[in-house]
Length: 248
Image (cartoon, rainbow, N blue to C red):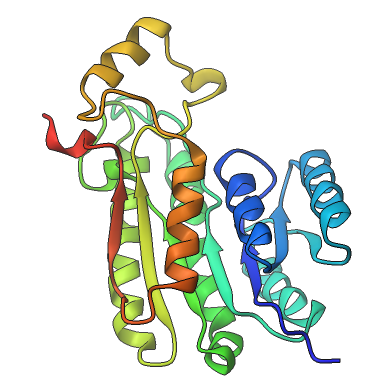
């Protein structure tokens, strides 16, 4: 029998915001392709959890998004699982410091490949499938694509590029495919070497108009909106930051 559920490919879906997007779309009766690279255990655990709720509704696929060959294979495999592809959520991203006095060419290439080149070629590979379903592409950008953050210039440039990529592809791929973006503010605190002190976290919260930290579910709801209820919206960047962009 032909598959009736929408099929959505989410990159970087094993944890954090990507996992929350997967949960929300799955709860909305969509079938999910969970892409992962290094977070295999988390991806498998999430797939097991969601498949226990609705059997045979989630699969995991591994790919290095810095490889054009693996990008092409990922999209083809994703479309072949249920014979269709209705949405691509470009969520996977790299984030680390690259201060001007210490940045290397390797870091530059890594960030641009992961955060800008990969979404473009994923979108390119998905076009033939999305045209058939009048599907859509959603890019997860960052408010720092408009507001540069000290010590992260290269990361900020990649997100600025992704904002322009959203608008350019919306024009190129219309009218069959819609392309939009979501620009999160303080939604998930940085981890590892990018972690922030409690004092700095509090200072950031004080600069948010709504005076509270965000939640990954806010981004998931925005993705669901673009997939289900935004038939006449393309080329738009939706800022979800609690009013953080209102302050200096």
